[in-house]
Amino acid sequence: MYAQAAIKPNPLLRNDAYGIIMRGVQKCTLGCSSLRGRKRLPLCCIKLDTATDPTCGTAGFLISAMHKMLSMADSEQQRKNIKKKQLHGFELQSNMFAVAAANMILRRDGNSNLECSDFLAKNPAQVQMKGATIGLMNPPYSQGTKADPSQYELSFIEHLLDSLTVGARAAVIVPQSSMTGKSKVEQAFKESIMKHHTLEGVITCNTDTFYGVGTNPVIAVFTAYEPHPKDKVCKFIDFRDDGYVVRAHVGLVEGDSAKDKLQHLLDTWCGRVEAPSKFCVESTVQSDDEWLHSFYYFNDEIPTDADFEKFIGDYLTFEFSMVMQNREYLFEGGVNDGKTE
Image (tube, rainbow, N blue to C red; front, side, top):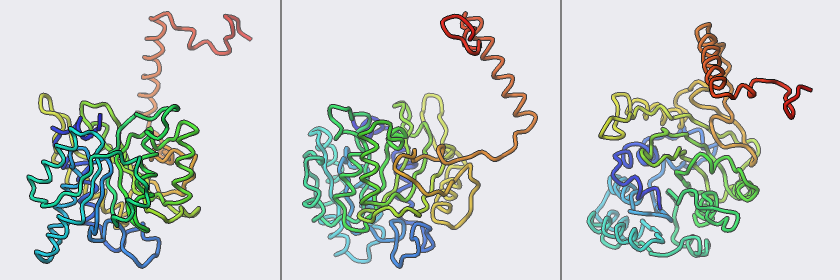
């Protein structure tokens, strides 16, 4: 099941994970650190020329992209072109495709460029002819296996990047596990991605973003067809504390600080403010790294006496609990076959 379907009733669909990407598109400035000194605009600065979502589900990304582009259009002709030519989506499941098409029609898109087909079976060169400068994706989760490695999230990411135009940007929402590259196949995907494309950064999201589904998501941003330079500095942001809270019998709702925290995230991503390492780490990367804030973050803060006492108390509580469960052997060092070496 696509994560988009699972979180359909979730207000966070518009306000948090999707909102981070779509509002980032609109708000960042020319000072964005991802420019690396180049004289062109990054994803968060350009007007969305053509957007594509290869696993569009119910078309949440495409609808958000359409609204953003329409809000920036200067004429009626531009609005017509946006609706008719500048939104493209693929969806494998026919029932989801029907919902996506209905959503686009109800929003008067006029001529929806949606296809009920398997995106992975498409030739990237043919998809590239659509001229997509922006890729947005929330692929199927946890479907990849050794028998079918094409279903790994990294496989979808690589296929999306291969299907975009040169210099296009892609933003994807995937599980944290996909950024670690646990298997050899996933490591190969990461190596291939870095060989042909550039990783800009990864944002770790609220663990309740997909409330009720049990997935810990991240947002990864890439630039297509620009091989990743060895000295490229990427941003890894811990945005788990995003201001959204779980309310009993309601679910995930926007807290009082959510808007301010989102603005701080955008300011940090675009280089307008400096943030402590516990929020943002800037680092070069390798394919065998875990592309996560927790991998690059080093806590250089000296713990207080209260922190130390709490840590010791937690350990003693854990040890007592294990002993009461007859598992005291866990604390017997150097044990081998019941005898101490």
